[in-house]
Image (cartoon, rainbow over the protein chains, first blue to last red):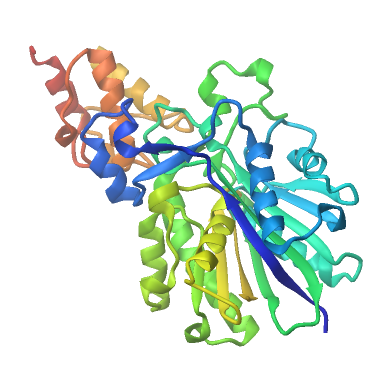
Length: 325
Length: 78
């Protein structure tokens, strides 16, 4: 039976490192509070000349280089982003052009921080349709451009970055085995950028903050812990796999306290959860793909391993994938 | 409404823009404000420092603090 397998992964983090102590717009006493409440010690920020497609392109090129895969053989490019280059057209179109993927269709998806797991499921469905055998999924975010620099409830959490996975059709007994995607639109105001769309157009915005990212931290934390736990349980139950059989958990790098709570709730050793949020902060939908790339490079997970990817974010949306590497 | 209370209310509404009909009295505690957490406390600390041109200790802005206690603190001479 044909499966959607991972041919290569890649990631790109901008070079500019912003440490907690560099966030001088906040009182000096908050440096330790950021680490305590989020686990974030530093984050990367895009240079002034870089936008979302620049980061996406770098991640894509690194991914393709690892597999020596020619860009003209890619049939579809999906870019997950909630911080696109422009309102339209899709950020994916810039990546398609600059990558030289002349035979690929390209479009964006926006499921905020869950975009990675939605994208994995979508790539899997496209390949299992039998019509495509090479799909490039990229998740790229430049949240430093959509945050309020003076909002302590959001600004310290986030960083910029991009990750990529090249999927291809294979007959090997590995790849994406199962996915669970969930949405609760009643929570669409919990995480949002209120202005700049058709609900509140730019010419009706009275304060710049209305076009910047906001989230209700306490509600997000409770949602992520409860639904992250539930969807991982649902995933392994539906796939008829024991949690103990999973070698690595690659979860959205939102907050170390969420990851520790997932570990406790699922009764899984915390060292099975890959963590890099201390270095990069929350890179929104890019976080799972960056973490997967780094987890493979670090040997945290490897060929033949069963891996769970899990993410949660605005919408509210959440989901998980079961993948054999 | 007391001017200081009004300023505090404006600060909370800026931090929590969805709370358009927020009602606060002298007895309201910060924990009574929906979505209040320790990250929001830093935002309120910065807002009040700007508004009252006064150093606001982080210990003042905990959940059990009442609006009256904040008004009393900002009303004290420097």
